Amino acid sequence: MTNGSENLPAHDKESHLSSPVEEQELVSVVLERWRFLSGTSVKLINVSENRTYLIETPRQRPTILRVHRHGYRSLAEIESELAWARSLTESGGILTPSPIAGCDGKEVQIVSHPRSGLPIQAVLFEFADGEHPDSRHNLCPLFSTLGSLAASTHNHSSNWQPPPAFVRPSWGLEATFGKRSLWGNWRQAPNVSAKIVSVLERAEQVVSRRLQRLGRKPSIYGLIHADMRLANLLVDGERVVLIDFDDCGFGWHLYDFAAAVSFMESDPQVPELFDAWLSAYRKKRQLTAEVEREMASFVMLRRLALLAWVGSRADSTEPQQLASGFAAGTARLAETYLAGFG
Image (cartoon, rainbow, N blue to C red; front, side, top):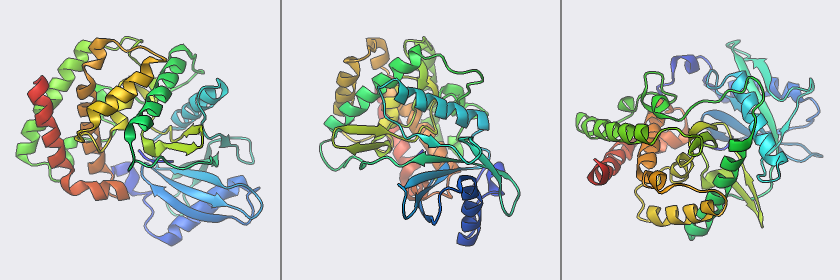
């Protein structure tokens, strides 16, 4: 979810880091795979799907270490993520941080957790200069940037031949609402009352019906970033770097806009932001009017996925901060959606 970015699933409870000492032990074991980083200083900068660290040394540029949540991504999925991000940069259209191979030449390192013995995967990335955009100012120019980036990534993925064994998750209906949904069942999130369930189940039914009708034509559905928010941009003058491909997968192209307005879906600016996003997108790639009409459906789909995420990530700071009012806010958004589409 965030830059890489409770009621833990069963496969996560064993690997949850319970103390700073345990965390230090794990990071030390991981960094042994990059022994050329001598005299390192380690700073935890994010905890979400993964744990992300700033690694600094006296005589080398900083790097970013991503230690994966056990069981969340397979080795094939991580290698596929890196392959697509690398291809985006090599094509000349999108800048992404490059992974740094370990001493054995492999970009994804697998170590045994020093206490549980569970396999832990890690990737080291080059440090990307830049700052996250200041969302306190006019958002329309920033959403124009997001729309342009989205169109470029969709154009690339539509014409790209993935390597053999390429595998990434889906962000479609089954992955959000099905029995094996990626982030769990939104009904199990904090403060989801019977009244809220009634409203959200109706919204789920309408979203499902409308998006099933829309279909999955290659012109509107394919490989997407799936978390293309302002928090995942680094801006350095005219240079923009897109980071955190950990959620990239297969979904409707317009889902990338829904991801862009994550956690601000009820903001009255959203229609204006969509216009800015869409205007920039259209300069590089077309969306049909039929797809554009479903903007609210994609926003609702994403919001329900986020509600499930909040319920399954209570060990992470951002979900903890959101938990108290997120279900009620989702219900209000659903009521507005149903008034227009239900």
